Length: 411
Image (cartoon, rainbow, N blue to C red; front, side):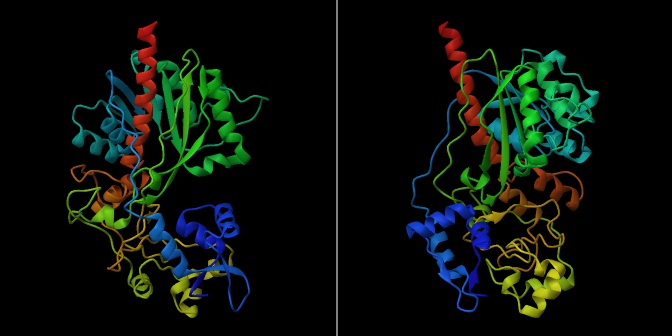
């Protein structure tokens, strides 16, 4: 099956759902074929390459979500990490007045890049934010996803005590911002069969916030050369009669070449920097993988040895032994680029991406420096919200706040 990919694999490669691919097949837009040996419906690799060229057509006019700020807007950022979201909000015109983060290296990163930011280092439970009440427009935070206890029929704030979402909601309640934004992994949608997300929405309702329809934003649609997805949870204070509109997806898809070479995203090639390497045994395997290839492009005996038990499982697993191509977006970055079976190999050299290449793929500016060891730097970058995604989301917040404050003035 070297020259063919399954429906599941095509879905991962193109970043489209299986249902979308089935619809395209019915419409004749991207037709599946019968694999000669198995007679399964599959796609020729060449088909996907040609189709991806269409998807990544640079001549398509890009979409702009830019909107100028009409007032001074402020935000508190919780679980701030290395500042990806805060950096993006700043680019959109929203000032961070306080940032909380427990990781000491991430805090050092924040302070060294923005000495004027008020970085509150340590456990969020140690901080009271009441002094900011009615003085801040936005509270944001990428809280970790944790299960709740469902003792009652309706999950309330008290039931979430002990979880980090409880702390997020507590800070929102103390600050009373016009709007709050939580972000998380896509898996939150299905966590505990959707009950965890349902509980979060119930808690925000209890403390006085209407939740906008939850959306999964694909970073690749927001000027980020990476197939990363984030769930966005937006709460608007109930006394405000202004709806929140998510940023519009861009028509242009940026690729690894856009990330690492001089072009529309960055004015110069990516700077040289430190990075990790693959163990000798893994390098010998990845040396055999072509650009845009993965484990199925290896000889069958090496496939079985490299994949182990995973070889016999269903699913594409297209992130394993994966060498990224210059003309495609990168797969989602992990916190450790050389960890087992989540390879994102450089197109030309058999090595993981360097620290600065990692940062470029997450759209951090080159002047944004990361503190700590190389491993700590990778961890901070891998955990971050892509800066450009944060900026586009920031424009949507600015649009909301502009409309709100103009309507208040009219009254």
